[in-house]
Image (tube, rainbow, N blue to C red; front, top):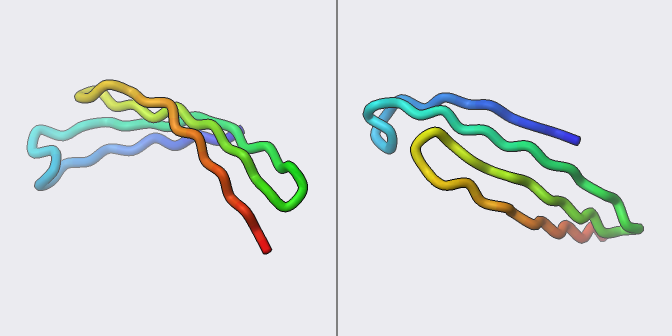
Length: 55
């Protein structure tokens, strides 16, 4: 399980914004499968599926 919290105040968010991410990663042999929920206080959140293949 992992998470992140951030604050941006700059060109892409002149009034400032807070964003966050929570998720988990499951190793499946040489493949890592991840699922994250990413959101902020100024936009609609999204579910992100990640697939990492190591060799």
